[in-house]
Image (tube, rainbow, N blue to C red; front, side, top):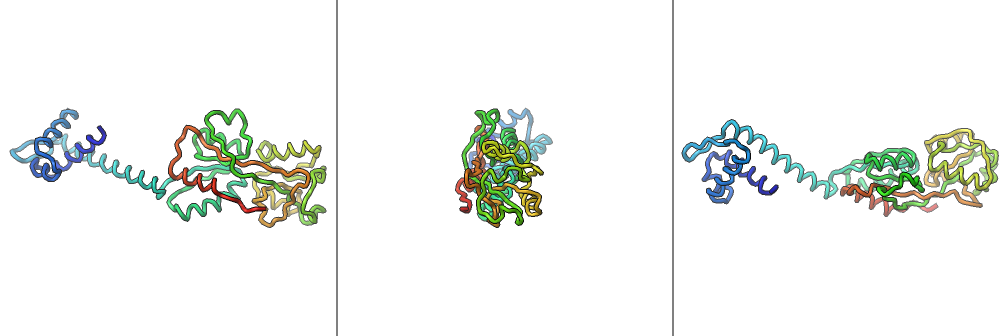
Length: 298
């Protein structure tokens, strides 16, 4: 039905342009009776007379002129839609909305997007930095196509609508001021942190929960002097001698971070998306780039 409707529209426009049924039929490579029957059916469906029939010539009525404008616009819109879909399939255009925590958006996504953008410069990205819980909620709400979060996802949010795929294992390392006694070491033990001033990620964040659990398991009680979200701010505060702080090893460009010798502070990053949403060509391609990404070895 869709194909027939667009064919009738094109034929109607050719007849309107030529003003002659015989010439229009020849141009369209159809018989004149078949073309005439199409136009009569169109007029019947519209409930309007589209042409004044004057001998062998045809002239648009007022209704016909109005319909000609709309028919022309409709065909142009359909053509633009087909072209847009072709561009999406070829990854010439498209958008990807993605969200993640500080480590993902600061240390991982820039390099991955840079490489992807070289191959597909027409793809645009919307990036949101937020705690894992917020990212999960945004994916479920349809605000984001894809999320990079720390596992586990809270059970009441995981549900049946969320697809969760483990992605990268990440180890957190301890940054210490240069003048701190631990600065001369390459590793630390959890008991070393007892009573120490600690610059921690904000309370309730996935990383903070992992850290608090690890501290509790080792019976260690540091003095939390500051809670922050920004990796850069944590690094700056440690450098200023305010306290000790944990960041992903991916954010430790200088390689000064200390690893725990008795039990590593590790987490699992995962890709999340809605199960009931079909991936666009752009999202599918970028997701493949994420899956194939290999971070530098520590």
